[in-house]
Image 1 (tube, helix red, strand yellow):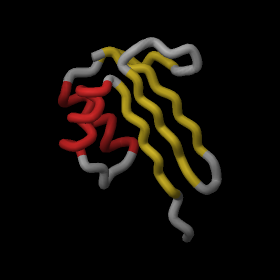
Image 2 (cartoon, helix red, strand yellow):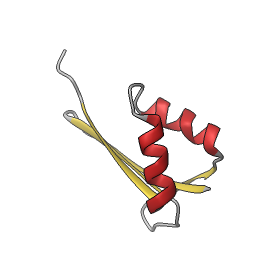
Image 3 (cartoon, helix red, strand yellow):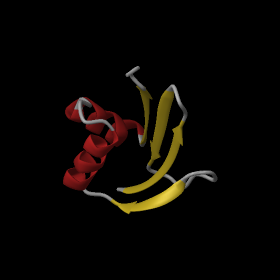
Image 4 (tube, helix red, strand yellow):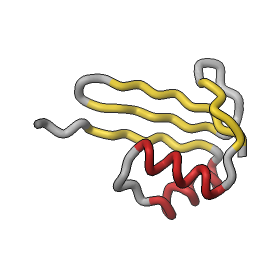
Length: 72
């Protein structure tokens, strides 16, 4: 699957959008098989539900990941 990505990081949260189709303000990050995509998801968020999110991106063709930065 070809993947385009948008990554917005603010002091309070991070929003990562992955899309399987070309998108105007997304950057092309490459061709991903299931294993490589799982590695990418773990890099984005280490405690992400891999199986659920793999099903979502394969079914819908896109995935939005919202991560709230924890206070230190």
